[in-house]
Image (cartoon, rainbow, N blue to C red; front, side, top):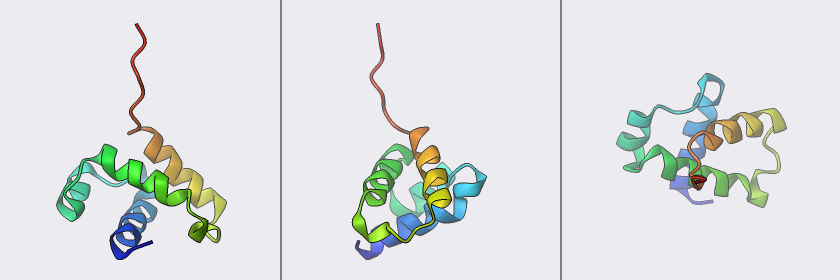
Length: 75
């Protein structure tokens, strides 16, 4: 995990109990959309390096990320 990924994860961890990081904070801090931010967070959470993260904290972050996931529209 590089320093930008660590900073992203830290922002996601801080805001997890409050429904996730605010879109404006994500844009200012990282210059990306919330969807891109949470896609990267999801990828980071899948790494072996985060095995020590408490499961409850990981679930909160994953729930926040799920709100921004792009899913295909059914017709």
